[in-house]
Image 1 (cartoon, one colour):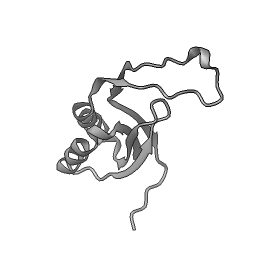
Image 2: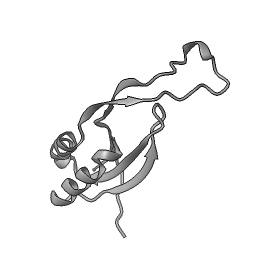
Image 3: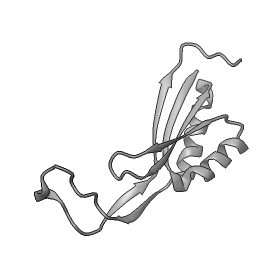
Length: 109
């Protein structure tokens, strides 16, 4: 048994949620915020058998894609202003960060 923790951009959240449901994976969705861009993310908690992990990772890969986006950097509050860039920059966002963790016990009540 494994616990998969997948952090995805909000734009990919509904598409991934629908794909998980269609493929009979149960997931818990949590609203989260990224630390770098301070933008909205969705964190999925998915418990599943070890044998189903490859298919689950494939579903996540197919539904969460990276994209380029222009962002206005957050000004430093009390930090060093020397490294602050006052104009929008293009960064890669999206995709998914996935952690696969071993589970000793699983109970469903």
